[in-house]
Length: 400
Image 1 (cartoon, rainbow, N blue to C red):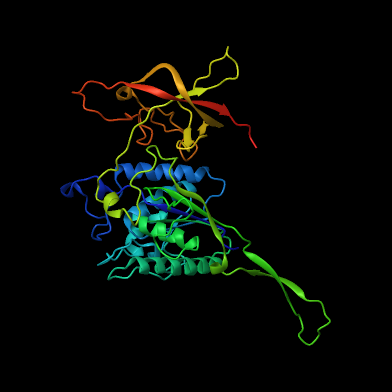
Image 2 (image 1 turned 60 degrees about the vertical axis):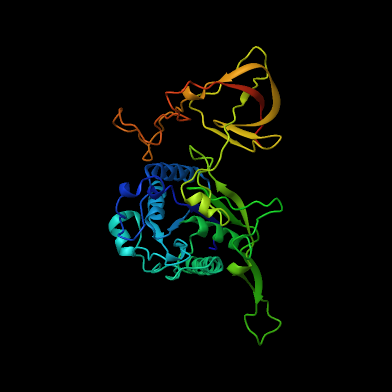
């Protein structure tokens, strides 16, 4: 069965980005700078895992970079999917000079035990590709990803014919390069549409690529070359990987993450994003009006409902509240409405665990679900109050 869907995820937030040098733990693999995820990165990985578990099209196979933060991210996903993950050196981190050689499969097997697959004779070394030890230029990275995709798909379609959907867990530069290769571009700096869009690459962000054209075509083959009048047998032939057309249907998706997109990585801004400095952001408050269709009835949003949005920079943004979909209409707010952000908290109902049962310990707090302030502030300063001037009237959309 041909590969028809490829998910690509970036690993969660690294402890190297949040801890001081003297606070960093020793790399579990013994490889220089191969630090584990931070607590926040672990939370992101669990959120990614739960999101993938909710998808109709789930991965049949998960393949990870051998660096610890990627393997750790993969573990959380695979534990929920009840799959082991495979490791392929072709997904290794990009180093411009003096690449760090990643841990071996045996080392990772001791750390991840049953979560990792290292004894499958069909897999062996996967794509049998690795990053150059002396480092790579952008062009060499792009070529590595091109060869990796071709070899990996060939391996999977030969040795794992039942696999149709895969998840690749890797690093920022590799995630972008893989995507641009799948979309048929020629270098790491290409824009993916006429609007100048790029492949988004925040921590634990998820891309989805799907085959646009058929992966098979029918051909006729003579059963007997000497008998021209005999009927020909019709056979299915798989379209070579290089000839398949791919489309991106999910670009850097992070709406399932509590904090949304963080630390987006691009080839143009890698120095800004990776040195720990935060991007400049503006906090905006708006009023949401959920219409009931009757002036006698007032609707309120359940505090525990899932809340997602997209296109706030568009004329008609979309919202998902619980299991319902709404479109918004921008309006000027009439009257006065105030926001008190310093007192705001996020509260979420504790869901049933991955096994289908709630925790036996009622006092146990899941770090993913623990309430936390939206904005941290200096308690010595006076609380800020904001006046809201924009309003979004939400109208429910009928299901298709």
